[in-house]
Length: 295
Image (cartoon, rainbow, N blue to C red):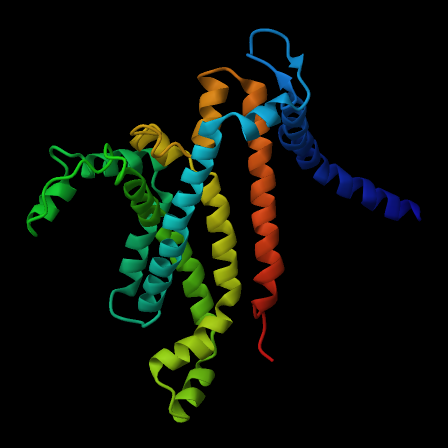
């Protein structure tokens, strides 16, 4: 290696060094520390006490709320992910028609994405209010009696899910819209000449060519669903009862209400393994059905 090459190498490393150091301090360090803490009992006040795999054994065999929160998270994902994808794709298809005012509508649909999650949750909490909420006022037009949308265990999770779908649909819509605009119009024209109707062209041309974007949105949406916290925290506080106590909310409770940091760390690593396995399955079985180019 020449002296000039060594100088270029030193300059390059000097540029990436701040990011690398920050990564070690703020990402890699806490990840390793969390793993170590998951094998301890620590209340933030006293020194951590090594307990081995006891936290994991307790979670998997004795903690009913662990399984309840996990089921609530799966239920939440089933409500938000499929419906969110369908709504976002439908909006993208409408925006792709080139109708008058499309830019205005696209902006309006994207506003919830950049809005504060706390502000959105508070607004929808008022919208759902059982006494003076707007939703009960609207449903009364159709003769539907008032409901306690976020204080009734039957409706609390669907209410939170609807809020999340509304907030995130603009982001997914933009991704789908970018994919739709990359679909060659010549393929649609050729299919139309062969007698294919709009529905057939959608299934045979649009959807396969949109598969990379569908795959990305599905993976990101599922990961986001398993990390749900802020909407539940503000709107329901995990209630009524345990109806909306999702996994991340239960981690927060153990860490910052019960001060069981080791126990919460064990929960966090179980969540990491679950998300990793789910993502791996998606990449394994859906990635091969994704078309990244024509031909």
